[in-house]
Image (cartoon, rainbow, N blue to C red; front, side, top):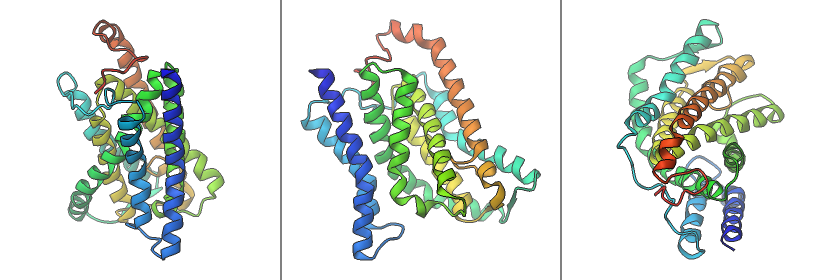
Length: 284
């Protein structure tokens, strides 16, 4: 019965996540405010989180595996990694692609730092809602059901990437066909789900994912959306430092593999302490 209840609740959460953005988009179109910062986008962003509050509070899932504690003791290096991974990845990709003539840097670093600082706090708040839905609910519940770790990461990545679809047009500026762009974007999000999910298993906390996601959004989105870098249209699929870029997918995949291997070494110690992949009852 417990297995069925948890699976039922995960399905309910997934249906809410897959539908809330389209509902928000419809509302935006009806009231004529189909733009960044709309009421529909607020519905899209907070609905998955609100659904887990209801599910955990009144549908039997409880709060034990919510990952709310910081658990910094013994995990400082993973927090440092979470802060610096995306900025370093962006430097590597922009450096390589600019050397190859695929990208050029259009503005100096001083206005960039100001623009980055302005979006840091809003990005952090936004990612509390997002990460405590995906890493704070869906991932631990699927792990608790005993599914294969890789399959859990893929399932979370697929639903998480599909959640982005209703408002995807606001965050990209490309002439590429969606038939090639969307599968590559989904692969990039699945790879991110592996990295975030493995760090969740290592730390038993959602906060490193919040930090990493915040730094990724603030650092990389500022570069792209504020036009600090310009990527040639014909090489965007390779050179974009965001999740749909081939180089970004490869580097994120390598980071996820490194965390995966690192955690395999630590499994005996974690099992001895009563923590395992199949039962995240003590992840909070």
